[in-house]
Image 1 (cartoon, rainbow, N blue to C red):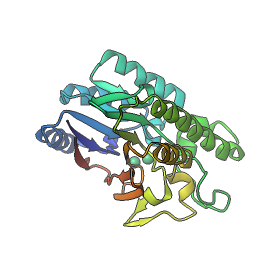
Image 2: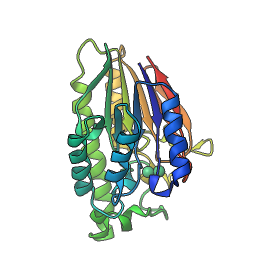
Image 3: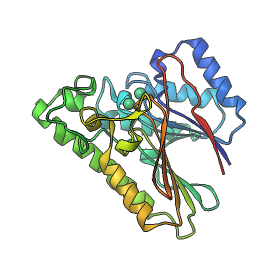
Image 4: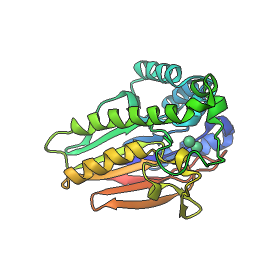
Length: 264
Ligand SMILES: [Fe+2]
Ligand SMILES: [Fe+2]
Protein backbone atom coordinates (compact mmCIF):
# COMPACT_ATOMS: atom_id res chain seq x y z
CA UNK A 1 0.00 0.00 0.00
CA UNK A 2 1.47 3.35 -1.05
CA UNK A 3 -0.09 6.71 -0.30
CA UNK A 4 0.91 10.05 -1.73
CA UNK A 5 0.58 12.89 0.77
CA UNK A 6 0.05 16.50 -0.25
CA UNK A 7 -1.10 19.54 1.73
CA UNK A 8 -2.15 23.17 1.52
CA UNK A 9 -2.80 23.09 -2.22
CA UNK A 10 -4.59 26.51 -2.18
CA UNK A 11 -5.89 25.70 -5.67
CA UNK A 12 -7.52 29.13 -6.07
CA UNK A 13 -3.94 30.46 -6.44
CA UNK A 14 -2.88 27.77 -8.93
CA UNK A 15 -2.77 28.33 -12.72
CA UNK A 16 -3.49 25.60 -15.23
CA UNK A 17 0.16 24.80 -15.88
CA UNK A 18 0.94 24.28 -12.18
CA UNK A 19 -2.26 22.24 -11.81
CA UNK A 20 -1.30 19.94 -14.71
CA UNK A 21 2.21 19.54 -13.28
CA UNK A 22 0.80 18.61 -9.86
CA UNK A 23 -1.65 16.06 -11.31
CA UNK A 24 1.16 14.54 -13.41
CA UNK A 25 3.41 14.33 -10.34
CA UNK A 26 0.71 12.60 -8.26
CA UNK A 27 -0.05 10.11 -11.06
CA UNK A 28 3.66 9.42 -11.73
CA UNK A 29 4.16 8.15 -8.18
CA UNK A 30 2.15 5.01 -9.01
CA UNK A 31 0.44 4.99 -5.61
CA UNK A 32 -2.81 3.43 -4.37
CA UNK A 33 -4.37 6.56 -2.85
CA UNK A 34 -3.93 10.28 -2.16
CA UNK A 35 -4.14 12.07 1.22
CA UNK A 36 -4.68 15.85 1.33
CA UNK A 37 -4.30 17.59 4.70
CA UNK A 38 -6.44 20.67 4.11
CA UNK A 39 -6.43 24.18 2.64
CA UNK A 40 -7.57 22.80 -0.70
CA UNK A 41 -9.03 26.15 -1.77
CA UNK A 42 -11.72 28.50 -0.37
CA UNK A 43 -15.44 27.89 0.22
CA UNK A 44 -16.51 29.41 -3.12
CA UNK A 45 -14.77 26.71 -5.17
CA UNK A 46 -13.68 23.94 -2.81
CA UNK A 47 -16.42 21.64 -4.14
CA UNK A 48 -15.41 22.42 -7.73
CA UNK A 49 -11.76 21.74 -6.93
CA UNK A 50 -12.62 18.41 -5.25
CA UNK A 51 -14.66 17.34 -8.30
CA UNK A 52 -11.80 18.38 -10.55
CA UNK A 53 -9.36 16.33 -8.47
CA UNK A 54 -11.64 13.29 -8.58
CA UNK A 55 -12.02 13.64 -12.36
CA UNK A 56 -8.27 14.09 -13.00
CA UNK A 57 -6.86 11.49 -10.60
CA UNK A 58 -8.38 8.01 -10.70
CA UNK A 59 -7.40 7.05 -7.17
CA UNK A 60 -9.20 7.23 -3.82
CA UNK A 61 -8.66 10.77 -2.45
CA UNK A 62 -8.81 11.03 1.35
CA UNK A 63 -8.87 14.60 2.65
CA UNK A 64 -9.60 16.94 5.52
CA UNK A 65 -10.42 20.65 5.26
CA UNK A 66 -8.25 23.52 6.49
CA UNK A 67 -9.22 26.97 7.75
CA UNK A 68 -8.94 28.50 4.24
CA UNK A 69 -11.52 26.06 2.88
CA UNK A 70 -14.16 27.90 4.94
CA UNK A 71 -13.22 31.42 3.69
CA UNK A 72 -16.31 33.15 2.28
CA UNK A 73 -18.80 30.90 4.07
CA UNK A 74 -19.39 29.23 7.41
CA UNK A 75 -17.75 26.11 8.81
CA UNK A 76 -21.05 24.16 8.95
CA UNK A 77 -22.28 25.10 5.45
CA UNK A 78 -18.92 24.30 3.86
CA UNK A 79 -18.68 20.94 5.61
CA UNK A 80 -22.21 20.09 4.48
CA UNK A 81 -21.57 20.88 0.81
CA UNK A 82 -18.25 19.02 0.85
CA UNK A 83 -19.81 15.98 2.53
CA UNK A 84 -22.60 16.07 -0.06
CA UNK A 85 -20.21 16.01 -3.07
CA UNK A 86 -18.48 12.96 -1.60
CA UNK A 87 -21.85 11.13 -1.75
CA UNK A 88 -21.87 11.68 -5.57
CA UNK A 89 -18.20 10.88 -6.13
CA UNK A 90 -17.21 7.68 -4.34
CA UNK A 91 -13.47 8.20 -4.87
CA UNK A 92 -13.63 11.25 -2.58
CA UNK A 93 -13.54 10.61 1.17
CA UNK A 94 -13.90 13.53 3.62
CA UNK A 95 -12.17 11.97 6.62
CA UNK A 96 -13.79 14.35 9.14
CA UNK A 97 -17.16 12.97 8.01
CA UNK A 98 -15.93 9.35 7.84
CA UNK A 99 -15.21 6.63 10.33
CA UNK A 100 -12.04 4.56 10.57
CA UNK A 101 -10.73 3.25 7.22
CA UNK A 102 -8.68 0.06 6.93
CA UNK A 103 -5.90 0.63 4.37
CA UNK A 104 -4.18 -2.76 4.69
CA UNK A 105 -4.73 -5.49 7.31
CA UNK A 106 -3.98 -3.90 10.69
CA UNK A 107 -3.19 -0.43 9.24
CA UNK A 108 -5.86 2.28 9.51
CA UNK A 109 -6.50 5.85 8.39
CA UNK A 110 -8.52 8.45 10.31
CA UNK A 111 -8.80 12.20 9.92
CA UNK A 112 -10.10 15.41 11.45
CA UNK A 113 -9.88 19.01 10.24
CA UNK A 114 -8.56 20.36 13.55
CA UNK A 115 -8.36 24.05 14.43
CA UNK A 116 -5.81 26.48 15.90
CA UNK A 117 -7.74 26.26 19.15
CA UNK A 118 -6.09 28.87 21.37
CA UNK A 119 -5.12 26.30 24.01
CA UNK A 120 -1.36 26.71 23.45
CA UNK A 121 0.64 29.94 23.72
CA UNK A 122 -0.63 33.33 24.83
CA UNK A 123 -3.83 34.36 22.99
CA UNK A 124 -4.48 37.40 25.23
CA UNK A 125 -1.14 39.06 24.54
CA UNK A 126 -0.75 37.94 20.94
CA UNK A 127 -1.00 40.66 18.26
CA UNK A 128 -1.68 37.91 15.67
CA UNK A 129 -5.19 37.91 14.23
CA UNK A 130 -5.70 35.60 11.26
CA UNK A 131 -7.85 36.41 8.22
CA UNK A 132 -10.08 33.61 9.55
CA UNK A 133 -11.77 36.17 11.79
CA UNK A 134 -13.02 38.27 8.88
CA UNK A 135 -13.27 35.59 6.18
CA UNK A 136 -15.25 32.91 8.05
CA UNK A 137 -18.86 33.76 8.96
CA UNK A 138 -18.75 31.99 12.34
CA UNK A 139 -16.17 34.55 13.53
CA UNK A 140 -17.23 37.60 11.50
CA UNK A 141 -20.76 37.51 12.87
CA UNK A 142 -19.83 37.58 16.57
CA UNK A 143 -18.12 39.97 18.96
CA UNK A 144 -14.32 39.45 18.99
CA UNK A 145 -14.63 38.70 22.70
CA UNK A 146 -16.20 35.36 21.67
CA UNK A 147 -13.37 34.37 19.32
CA UNK A 148 -11.26 32.42 21.84
CA UNK A 149 -14.35 30.47 22.93
CA UNK A 150 -15.16 29.59 19.31
CA UNK A 151 -11.56 28.48 18.64
CA UNK A 152 -11.67 26.27 21.70
CA UNK A 153 -15.04 24.79 20.66
CA UNK A 154 -13.77 23.89 17.18
CA UNK A 155 -10.72 22.22 18.71
CA UNK A 156 -12.87 20.36 21.24
CA UNK A 157 -15.22 19.06 18.53
CA UNK A 158 -12.30 17.79 16.43
CA UNK A 159 -10.71 16.20 19.50
CA UNK A 160 -13.97 14.48 20.54
CA UNK A 161 -14.59 13.05 17.07
CA UNK A 162 -10.98 11.90 16.78
CA UNK A 163 -11.13 10.19 20.19
CA UNK A 164 -14.23 8.23 19.09
CA UNK A 165 -12.55 7.16 15.86
CA UNK A 166 -9.37 6.02 17.62
CA UNK A 167 -11.36 4.12 20.24
CA UNK A 168 -13.21 2.34 17.42
CA UNK A 169 -9.95 0.79 16.17
CA UNK A 170 -10.01 -3.00 16.55
CA UNK A 171 -7.71 -4.88 18.93
CA UNK A 172 -5.79 -6.13 15.89
CA UNK A 173 -4.73 -2.59 14.83
CA UNK A 174 -0.96 -2.22 14.54
CA UNK A 175 -0.77 1.18 12.92
CA UNK A 176 -2.88 4.28 12.37
CA UNK A 177 -2.27 7.28 10.15
CA UNK A 178 -4.02 10.43 11.35
CA UNK A 179 -4.60 13.17 8.77
CA UNK A 180 -5.33 16.65 10.17
CA UNK A 181 -4.79 20.23 9.04
CA UNK A 182 -3.46 21.98 12.13
CA UNK A 183 -0.31 20.73 13.89
CA UNK A 184 -1.45 19.09 17.13
CA UNK A 185 1.67 20.00 19.15
CA UNK A 186 3.93 23.03 19.48
CA UNK A 187 6.81 20.66 18.65
CA UNK A 188 5.17 19.90 15.29
CA UNK A 189 4.40 23.54 14.45
CA UNK A 190 7.37 24.42 12.23
CA UNK A 191 8.37 27.73 10.70
CA UNK A 192 11.72 28.03 8.92
CA UNK A 193 13.17 25.06 10.82
CA UNK A 194 12.06 26.31 14.26
CA UNK A 195 8.93 25.58 16.24
CA UNK A 196 6.32 28.17 17.18
CA UNK A 197 6.49 30.86 19.86
CA UNK A 198 3.74 31.87 22.32
CA UNK A 199 2.31 34.52 19.99
CA UNK A 200 1.62 32.22 17.01
CA UNK A 201 0.87 29.00 18.89
CA UNK A 202 -2.79 29.87 19.69
CA UNK A 203 -3.60 29.92 15.95
CA UNK A 204 -1.22 27.23 14.69
CA UNK A 205 -1.59 24.41 17.21
CA UNK A 206 -4.65 22.27 17.97
CA UNK A 207 -3.75 21.42 21.56
CA UNK A 208 -6.91 19.44 22.27
CA UNK A 209 -6.28 17.08 19.32
CA UNK A 210 -2.68 16.78 20.56
CA UNK A 211 -3.91 15.73 24.02
CA UNK A 212 -6.11 12.98 22.50
CA UNK A 213 -3.22 11.70 20.37
CA UNK A 214 -0.79 11.66 23.29
CA UNK A 215 -3.21 9.86 25.57
CA UNK A 216 -4.08 7.24 22.94
CA UNK A 217 -0.41 6.64 22.10
CA UNK A 218 0.40 6.20 25.79
CA UNK A 219 -2.44 3.73 26.33
CA UNK A 220 -1.73 1.75 23.13
CA UNK A 221 2.05 1.33 22.90
CA UNK A 222 1.67 -1.49 20.32
CA UNK A 223 -0.07 0.85 17.83
CA UNK A 224 2.30 2.92 15.71
CA UNK A 225 0.80 6.38 15.13
CA UNK A 226 1.80 8.61 12.21
CA UNK A 227 0.24 12.06 12.09
CA UNK A 228 0.22 14.11 8.87
CA UNK A 229 -0.56 17.82 9.06
CA UNK A 230 0.00 21.14 7.28
CA UNK A 231 -1.18 24.73 7.93
CA UNK A 232 2.23 26.31 8.68
CA UNK A 233 3.56 25.68 5.12
CA UNK A 234 6.93 24.73 6.65
CA UNK A 235 8.07 21.14 6.93
CA UNK A 236 9.38 19.25 9.94
CA UNK A 237 9.05 16.04 11.90
CA UNK A 238 8.46 15.70 15.65
CA UNK A 239 8.74 12.47 17.60
CA UNK A 240 6.32 12.92 20.50
CA UNK A 241 6.56 9.35 21.84
CA UNK A 242 8.20 6.12 20.63
CA UNK A 243 4.94 5.27 18.83
CA UNK A 244 3.82 8.83 17.90
CA UNK A 245 5.47 10.75 15.05
CA UNK A 246 4.10 13.95 13.51
CA UNK A 247 5.07 15.10 10.01
CA UNK A 248 4.24 18.65 8.93
CA UNK A 249 4.11 19.46 5.20
CA UNK A 250 5.71 22.36 3.34
CA UNK A 251 3.67 24.42 0.88
CA UNK A 252 4.02 27.39 -1.43
CA UNK A 253 1.14 29.40 -2.90
CA UNK A 254 0.76 28.74 -6.63
CA UNK A 255 3.04 25.70 -6.65
CA UNK A 256 1.26 22.63 -5.25
CA UNK A 257 3.61 19.74 -4.55
CA UNK A 258 3.82 16.19 -3.29
CA UNK A 259 5.10 16.12 0.28
CA UNK A 260 6.06 12.45 0.38
CA UNK A 261 5.01 8.90 -0.42
CA UNK A 262 4.15 6.70 2.56
CA UNK A 263 4.45 2.97 2.24
CA UNK A 264 3.32 -0.08 4.25
FE1 LIG B 1 -2.38 26.73 4.07
FE1 LIG C 1 -4.28 26.56 7.15
